[in-house]
Length: 473
Image: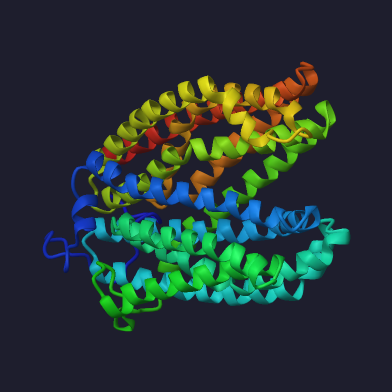
C-alpha cells in the first residue's frame, strides 16, 4: 500500500516481523485484540470520569454563585478564554492518542515513546506561549468581551486560572497518552482525583479561607497540580505504563510533530467552531424569542451534554481502536469498529431518548426551582423532548469523526464539524426560526436537522474511505 501523511511517524524502523512489542500491558492487549471488546472496555472508565467532571463543573458554578451575580458573571466572561484551553487540551490529547495508537498497531515501540516525548515538548512550548499571552492581554481581552463592572473579579479569577495553563494542557496530553495504550482506567482515576479535590477545595478556599472568586480558581489549579504529580509518578517513577517517557528515545522529527498537531489543532478548531455556533444560535434566539429563549437553551443544553457523555466516551475509544487498526493495516477492523460503535451508540441513544422524554418535566424543575424561574420549566421540558430526536442521530457523526481522527485525518474530522455546525445547524436554525416563523422551536429543530444531515454525510464519507483503503491492500 502506498504510504501517506496518515501513516505512523518514523520514530524507528517498524517491527515488520510482528515480533515483540516490549512490555505488553493489559491495555495494549485489549486494543490490539477484538475491536468490539476494546470499545466496550475503553468506554466504561471514560463514561464514569466524564460524568464526574461534568458534575464538578455544575458544583463549581453553584459555589461561585454564592458570591453573588457579579462573581458568576465574572466567571462567565473568563469562560470563552478558558474554553480555548479546554479545546487545546483535548486536541493535544486526541493527537497523542491517534499517533501513538497507530505506532502501537504498526509494532513500533520506539515510535510510541518518541511520539509521547514530542507530545510533552509541544505541550510545554505551547503552554509557555499561551500563559504569557493570556496574562499580558487578559485585561483588554476581558474588556472586549464586555466584563465592564465585573472586570476586577474577572481579572482576579483569570490571573490564577491562566497561571495554571501548563497544568491543564499537560494533564490533557497525558490523558491522551494513557488512552492511546488502552489505559482508560488510569486516566479515569486521575480525572476522578482532580474532580473530587476540586469539589472539596472550592468551599474551603472560597469561603473558609476568604479568597472569594480567586479561591475557585486556586481550587482548580491545585487539583490539576496534584493530578500532574500523580501522572509524573506513574510515568517517571513507577514506570508500569507501556509508554516509556525516557529521553533516550527522543529523536527530533518534524514529521512526528506534524502528525500530532495534524490531529490536535483541527480538534481544537472543532471546539471553537462549536462555540461560534452556540453564539450564533443565541443571537437567533434573542431575535425571535428574547433572552428567556437563551436561558432555556443554555439550561437544557447542559442536560443534553450530560446525556451524550456515553456517546462521546465511545467516540474517544474509537479513536484509539481506529489508530491501532490503521497502524497494523487491519482495515477490516476499522469497518468493524465503525459499525459496532454506531450500533451500540444507537442503543444507548434510544434508551436515553425514551428516558429523557418521560422525565423531561421533572428534569426541567432542576433549573426552575425558584419563583423567578418557575415559568421556564414547561419550555425547558419541551426543548428536552425535541432533543430526544437529536440523540438518535448523534452516533453516526461522532463515531465517523473519531475514525478519521484515529487514522490521522484530523482535517477531515474538522470539515465534518464545520459542515454539521456552521453549514447545517446554523442555516437550518435560521431558516426554520425566521423564514418559517417557528421561533425558538425552529432553532431546536434546526439543531436536529443539522445533525441528521451532517451525520449522514460523515457516515457515507467514512464508508467510502474504508472501502478505498481496503482496495489498496
